[in-house]
Image (tube, rainbow, N blue to C red):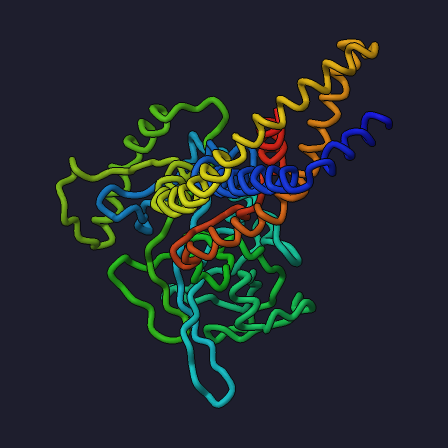
Length: 395
């Protein structure tokens, strides 16, 4: 306790120097924590869960990464290397407001296990249960009413952010859909324009070149996602998909779908979802670098000014330690006092760095257009990283 009191007195002995040094360290720690926290979540770890490295997207090489109906049916029937497989297809549902005005709302038709693959918990309610969903008729329209999960955007725009929205129905696409859940604000899959997800059982049977008229308009751009079994290699997965594709091509021909490319050039492609996310977000690294560069330049000037004052302070402390040693203070006692001062300094700098970090993180997110950013994890501060920055700064 005496060491702590003495450390406080040392800080107050030269308040201008102590305040400037604390503020400089707080700015450095806060800015570094915010930038590297954003970089970690956007580029290094964009997906939640310990199995995120096994989540892959399966598409057709000549289909812009999407799947045909025949390909989806083949993958559903032959999961092979996948412990779980799901899909999603963009759909536009007509929402009629008061006065009769109709507005197209973008969302996804998905397999019931869609959210299980992503490993994200809802903000309100629940996600789809196994086997829960609606069956589509021959035109791709649901045979009856079903349930729906809203995105944060859909919850605010369609329901006004009502916290008691669960188990209420909403009229979309000519059907009464019961709201069972709301996803967190940060979950924007596949895009920030997504308003909802509707579960569909089975495989849609709409040909790729056919549109569905009316209140329920499917985009027919199916995205397939699989969770690799533990220990399964990429080579084994690609080999399985290569062996499966000839039957897909034969099924497409029997359905009358045109094959515009040579059979040898066609096939399945498999890509890591984690790597795809990281590559799509990598374009925002220049924003982080620019913010960090500006802050770093200002801090460099501040550190240079403080360095000269620190040298003068160190000469005074050297004389102080010499006097205390002459009065009988042992080396262990002096080291303990010095460590106490550093710990107190680090604690105060860390507290001051918190609002700085939050401010810089808000600046970063303000520079990123949300509609350009697909996101499955919240961009937030990394507490362990902040603690490390504080220890390094005062060490």
